[in-house]
Length: 153
Image 1 (tube, rainbow, N blue to C red):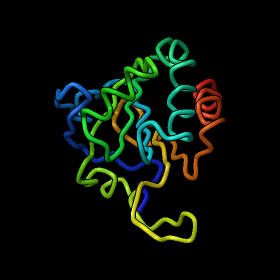
Image 2: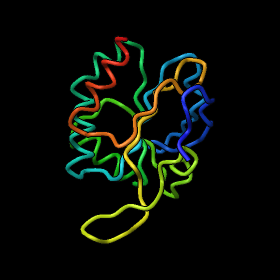
Image 3: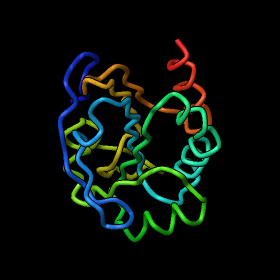
Image 4: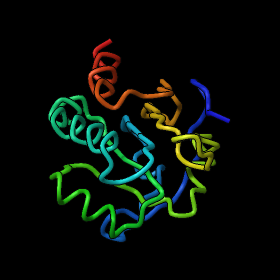
């Protein structure tokens, strides 16, 4: 079940692309853009990540931390981050526990096949750790602009 606006974001602990541990609570006092995506180096996920990269200075100016989460390994994240020069942290949720915690793991369909996977979803978390905005069924091509518009009010 998706966490709703106004609710406290659940804390979690995941490794980044370098094996460093991150807790969501480490970012208390800052805005966090927590975006869940299905898979490193696939067309939609690459487009979404590169748009965040291209707009990164605007997020930085707004004091927003970007954290990407997928079920890929830290090694996969390291390759993806290096290949596309991504300036933000990618977190490895290999057992998809955090995806489940945030309600973004579930049944999907592709080419007539059903499987379990990540539903592309983003949470904007305020400095108090509360969900300020939920973006569901994200369009990778327009998502960064959509978030920046929200941040500008």
